[in-house]
Length: 134
Image 1 (cartoon, rainbow, N blue to C red):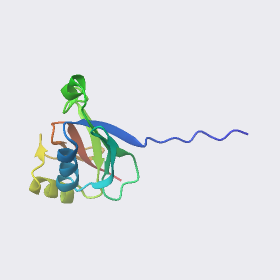
Image 2: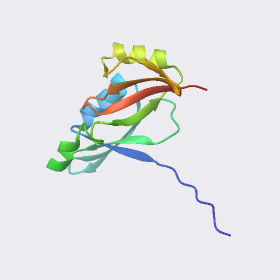
Image 3: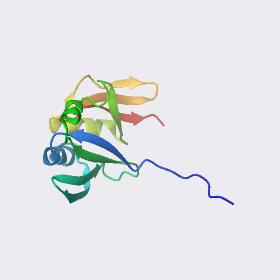
Image 4: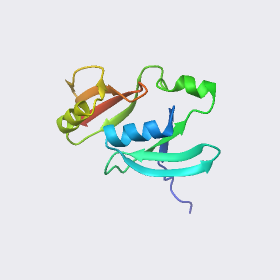
């Protein structure tokens, strides 16, 4: 009898200009946890960050190493929202993020599915901060 398929996304690569700037942004401004920062040699590192108490995929911060990769920094999805940060307390996190200088591209809004607002990371990638209705 074969094992049932069991898979999960372990990490999502986010192309960044600089490891340390990205680590500072995610850990200081968004209060993510630094999960791993391993030197791989030749200027490469394996850097993973994650929201506090998360149980899903980590963000793998991948420093651009080619001109083509550098062009994609901040626009990995052609201007669409790229990542969705779910929260159990929208207003707590929204207020904290505002205090930390996070750039929001709109005012918070109520949708059928929850409370949401679009914000940008340090390179301009768009994210949703989202609290789903129960």
